[in-house]
Length: 397
Ligand SMILES: Cc1ncc(COP(=O)(O)O)c(C=O)c1O
Image (tube, rainbow, N blue to C red):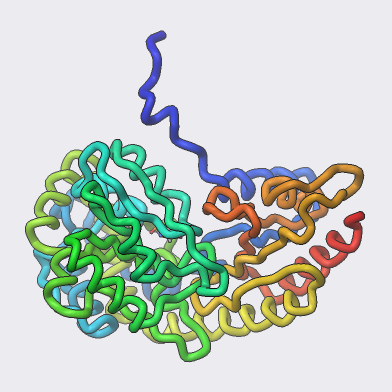
């Protein structure tokens, strides 16, 4: 057999999925595992969305749709951008895809040439750098400071720009840190991007999950100059508990949307026809269910913050968005747990999993001091899981 593609062989499997797989395996074997590793809401997709999809199936909406999405869904997305983000887009600015991940892939592939540099602030969602690698471009990981909520400042961004810089990826609210950029921070980053003509990929999939009066602002909304060079990525996945439906979308300048649509016409083609009907109903009529979901998340968030605040030796920034807490556990590194020295976030999560709690190590996100806890789980699990974490920590020598 000849050698496989060097680019494909270099791709790392998703750390989140491998932890979830091991936790599921343990559960199957009758062991008790409390999982803080999931990256999706644990709610069911609201019934009215399912009904819209069923109706579409009954009507025979089972054929190809336009590559970039149905006219109804594109209209709903344009309305959403106007309503939620003060952004005016027309249907030709929008490309619907099979999930935000797919939108990100097509967006990056559409703008990157080999050896272009992409600035990615740490910590970052693992998929970004893998896609940049697939495109033959280079990730430039930006160090950020814990005291600044792990957010890149405009000055730090500017200092990393070289003639090869093509783009920066901003993810607010952030996975894994839960940080949310303020309007003032984003305005300064936008000024630098415009000054140096650097594209911005703005991943806003967690935009509705913001707490304590925090406001999500889209960087694209600060005027025509920044809007022209920004590709906004979003999806129905997290907002409406529709992760399995695989419907994402992006908005950008029409010239870029045209290239992305052409690219997508040769990869996935259109997103699933009847799933687009469900997504249209979600975006047009989902507000009430979103508010209900946010209220539940707000309770869980407060609970996990309170419990972790009483946990010895761990530190964390209070997350303002998404459904993650990024917890610095490095005070325990170099110490022994059941005879084994715990040296990093992977060792820590592996020992913690054997103790019956699944969490995701920070190393693949670009921060080895931390672990990511997802609170997309019941209050009962949060109580029990953090109690177990405390017992686990007490056993360290
Ligand atoms: C920051 C971020 N962007 C994008 C995605 C992908 O979303 P989708 O399921 O719509 O592909 C995820 C999923 O975990 C995410 O955390």
